[in-house]
Amino acid sequence: MDSSDHELVAQATSGDEDAFAQLVSRHQGPIKSYLYRLTACREDAEDLAQEVWIGVFTRLGAFDGRSSVRTWLFAIATQLAMDHHRAKARWPVDAQDKAKALAAADPEVPEILRRTHWELPHARYEMREHIDFCFTCIMKTLPLAEHIAFMLSELYGFTDAEASEVLGRSVGAVTNLLHQARTTMNRILEQRCALINQQGVCHQCAELNGLFNPHQAEQQELAKLDLVRAAQEPGRQDLFELRTALVRSIDPLNAAGTNLHEVIMQVVRQASGSE
Image (cartoon, rainbow, N blue to C red; front, side, top):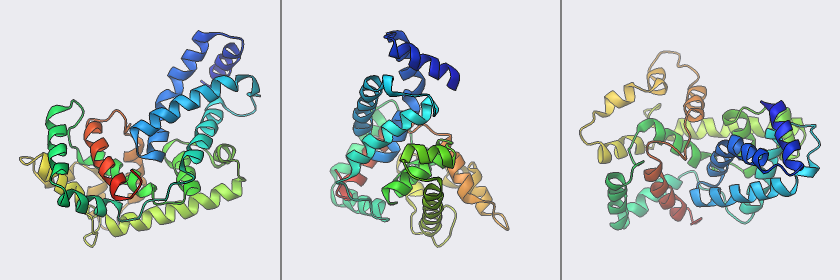
């Protein structure tokens, strides 16, 4: 695929509009989902994605072919996202708790959630998708460089060397960022997620399931998740890898519950002071 990517860039550089359209079509989905996971806002992700392709078009002649086209595209997207985030504070670990308190204090919030659930086409509540939602929220608590390195490696399959090109840092620096990010993410998930730890403080998955799927047995839904089954086994499997594998399998912008999650994410952004 990458050799054909290089051909598309060469053709687009020569003025072939169809080649540029093919390049956009091929990479638009991953780029936009990456930007969404960085911004936690569909509107910001779509705006930044437009800026990415404008930037790509204006820089076609500068692509020297030494890296993969995918790495080059993500580097452009990353720089734009970092510029977008420079003035924004990172989220607190308890961002979802703050959102829950905000929703409890404002009766309009649960009403908006109910209307979204019943009226929009992609507003079905699924626990596996909410795990992805929570993962996005918790990644937003990491320092930005760690957040980016973690996503490139764990969710988009970049090697440390490729991630170093995207971030403009040494391979050793990226390796250190990844270690810090994985350590922090694992610790937060272990402490907060009641799915895998009886001492976990967050029961949001079960609470929302009860709200949107009142006739659906919570335990039956939980039993469908490899993550939950593994957490109950002696000598538990690598739950972190199971969780990231689940997240990798979901496109947050085209999921069954994406409309519902947009509303919930808006509440989280508001509660975190980033709306």
